Each structure stands twice: as C-alpha cells, then as structure tokens.
Image (cartoon, rainbow, N blue to C red; front, side):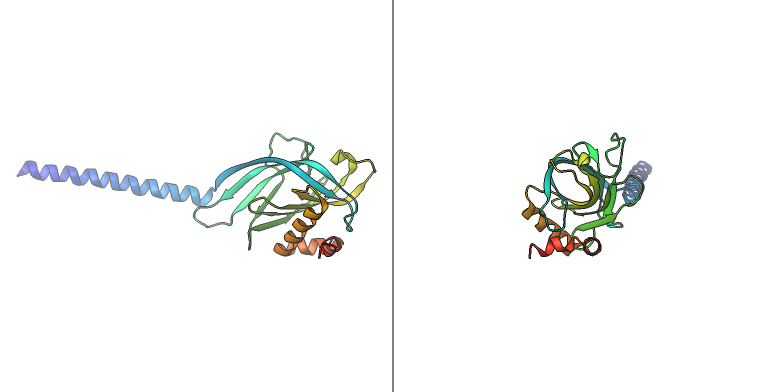
Length: 204
C-alpha cells in the first residue's frame, strides 16, 4: 500500500515538473516573440527605371539591388514591417558609404492594403520618400540625384527624379507609380506637392 502511494506521488511529481517546464517554455516563447519579430532575408537584383521629368519623356534603366528583412510579429502586437537598403549600380540611395550593413536605409510598417510609406531625412540622403508593397512587387522612391549616381545615359541630368522598381519601360513604371499613389496617401500627397501627379495623369 505504501509502495503504491509512493508510486502515485512519484508520478504526480513527474507530471507536475513536466507541466511547469512546458508552461515556462511557452511563456518564454511568448515573451520573446512579443518583443522580437520573425525575420526573413530579402536580397534580389532587378532593373529599375529612373524618371527625370513629370511628363515621362526622359527616363533610363538602372541596375538595382534590394537588400533587407521582412519583420513578422506572430502575436500581431505590431504591424508587419520591412527594413532594408536599395542600391543603384552598387551605391545606396540612402547615402550609406559603408555597405557592410546592408539593412541600414529605410524602415516602414505596412498599413491598409499591404503598402508602406516613409519619408527620409538627413544630410547627403538622396532618397526623399519610399513607398513599397508588402510583397516587394512595387517600389517607388522620390530621389534627388545626378547622372553620375545612376551611371548611365548620355545627357547630363541633376535633380529630383522618381525611381521605380521594377522598371523595364516607362509605361509599366507609370502603372506602378499610380498603384502606389492609390494605396498610400502619403506618397500621393508627396507626388502632388512635387508636381509628379502630372505623370500619373498621362497614364489615365
């Protein structure tokens, strides 16, 4: 009888220890992922389109690399987000001279229909604003740059421009810009304030 009670006590203690361990493990898991996102690496190269004037009559293709991390909060306590960098022919449009940290550049959270937008600031930062879709299928940047930064073309250009990713031709670039303006009021307002809304109108 005593042996049977000892066996029951041993089983109870074992089950209790396992239960407490599981609870602590789950709590540790929840606490960690409450403060830390699941990160997914992003790194791809494609062709971008730099548009030099609101009429869309002056444009050129450039080699573009997008590096970054998508940030997913499994507890939904924060919005989905993306941080990263964009390089044109190897040079960051966010003014980074040290490219060893490829994730320094932009950070934006996604709202509404999976679009994020953020304006940037600081000395020597060519990118003024960036709007992008959560799946990175569409990226539009307002940039201030010179021809030497893009590395292509025959005519000297310097000033504000739009960088569209992907951008194989001007017509597809216009559609991406229009899509960004429809999904991001911040980008729409910026385009209007800087005279780029005329570029969208030419595609209507």
